[in-house]
Every structure is written in C-alpha cells, then in structure tokens.
Length: 80
Image (cartoon, rainbow, N blue to C red; front, side, top):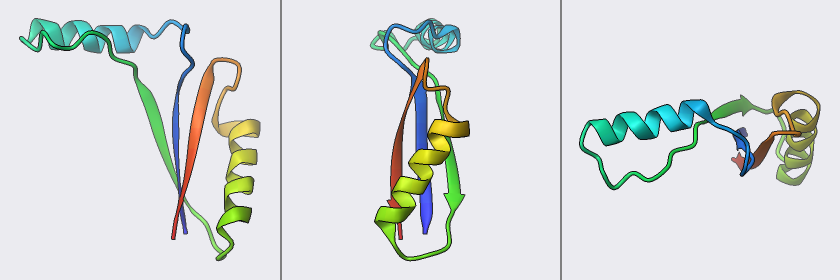
C-alpha cells in the first residue's frame, strides 16, 4: 500500500513562498493567477492490507511528526 500525504499551510497563515510563486507567474504573463499556496507531498510505502488501519496509523504519524498541526493541515490518501 502507499500513503500519500498532502500538507499545506492553514488558511490565514502567511505563505511567502506561495506569494512569490503568484507574483512570478503574474510577471511571466499568467495574469489569471490570483493566489498560490505552496505545500508538500509525502509518499510512504506501507506493509499490510488493512486500509482503515493504515489511514489511522498515517494520521498518527502526521500528528506526531509529519505536519506542524498548529499552522499546517493535511490530507491522507491510502492507495492499494
């Protein structure tokens, strides 16, 4: 199984990298870009076949290490 974790800053948290991306895209002529937020994706290979247990374990990993839950939110996907 594979766990894919999408981590990004919570709304309202300053994102200077996202702002730089947005400005740069505008400077390159992509005027339709209003805002950008930068995040990260972590992929973890997991042994076992119980997707519900895997989701719970990966959520625990996010809470303890992978995400700074004060300023970041995350989404866990489990793929077989």
